[in-house]
Image (tube, rainbow, N blue to C red):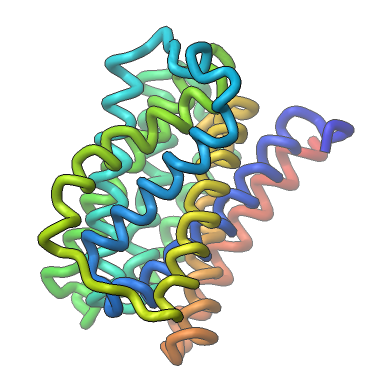
Amino acid sequence: MNRLSPNSRAIALMISAIVMFSLMDATAKALTPRIGVIPALWVRYAGQMLVVLVLVARRFPQVLHTRYPILQMARSVLLMIATWCFFIGISNIGLSAATAIMNINPVLITLGAALFLNEKLGPRRIGGIAVALIGALIVIRPGGAVFSHYAIYPLVAAVSITAYNLATRFFGKDEDVWTSMLYTSLFGTLVLSALVVPNWQTPDLTAVGLMVLLVVFGTASQLLLIRALGEGEASMLAPFAYVGLLLATIWGLVFFAEVPDLWTIIGALVIAGAGIYVWHRETFR
């Protein structure tokens, strides 16, 4: 990967992060009916915290040091809100439908990056975002059955994850990636540890396996995302978040027998095409 240009490397890291996020979401959808939303959230955060502490044990004081303590804690709060809302969403509506609603966040990221990070908004990026948004609207089809009150949760998650991504991009390469990983899981672990006891449900063997996968996918996704946003501009990477919608459709079909209709397939293809176009223009221009 070191032979790639900075933009190509950032894009590869971003796509890898989206793959891990989609697998985490599918795992959470399978796990929450078995143990509940709050225990699943606690596993996601406490597990990541444990993994990070083990990996950085020898240099913990250095990793704990941050130049942006308030912003790091704000990131942790934003991510917990986003994860909590999205877990509720995927527990009550289809995985592809929830992901489609969540995927308004690349539009928000691109606009936020221009407003707050002084990143350029060229016609290629605007075009890629616009086409991908059209694809997402094809999947959602406003006025359809997707718009139950549970659709509000992934919408709130989209706004929260947008702010989280912009804050992560703001750090850039100023912060150790493990410092960001540690603070990302800190607030969620503390809050959810207080809430999990009265909501705990003893997991069966299948649930234990899903819990392990949730930790692995959740930790890997955060690590890859932080690295991607440290390498490339948030507005350039935004369209590739739409790949998650295509993956969510596949996982929904394979694992939950959620058969996508024709419009979902068309929308997913439009979204993937927009991301591939932006990647091609940024890599081979």
